[in-house]
Length: 166
Image (cartoon, rainbow, N blue to C red):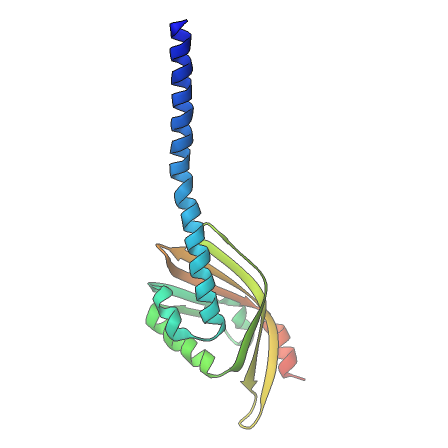
């Protein structure tokens, strides 16, 4: 009888230790998701408002920014390194006005954040004329140690070109 009681106590102790060990492994993932979500929201807010000076602190030194769908306008965009990404994005955002973004969906999973929506802005089409364009874009962010190591955009540039050819 004493052996059965001891076995029951040992089984309960094992179950508790398994549960607690599992919680130790699960908890960092939950915290990581919360931190990726929080960082992503701040980052995407600055990005979608063209605030490059505020984005720099989110990037790893070796950050990669790419847009493979930009090849429709000549070649895919691939920028490596924090200073290069800062310079290129600063130039890009300086060329547009009235930037806005309408989100469609977004989520974080592990070290990635995926976000999609429609971007709109005024862009110059000649020395004296500007036009407003709107097109869909998907952004995928990859994080390591709380920093963005890769920012990839995929945009519907065919829609943009059609708007410019009107």
